Length: 98
Image (cartoon, rainbow, N blue to C red; front, side, top):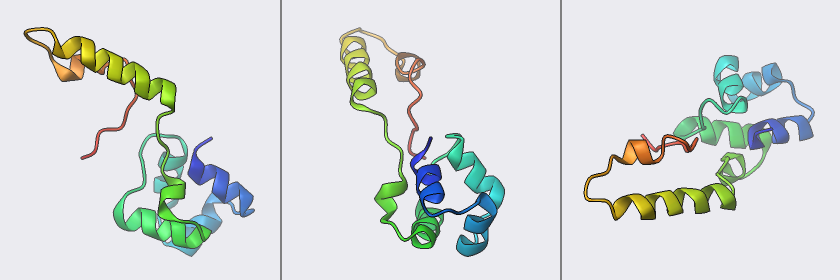
């Protein structure tokens, strides 16, 4: 369960309720709740305001084990003469900032 979905359920809101209050499209909210995308910028602001939480409360982050594994993979790869950073992180489901 994503943080957005968790807060929405705590507030006893449906996706449609949140869409109506925030002005964010239901499909966008659904994509965020499925973990397909992360809320940023105005979308993040509108959702956090509608749920009466801080924006940071809606951002899902990798847990410490995922971060440690990614750091270990990067450290091992950067010692190689030639490495492709996308290949190094292919096994990790980390969201890259656009």
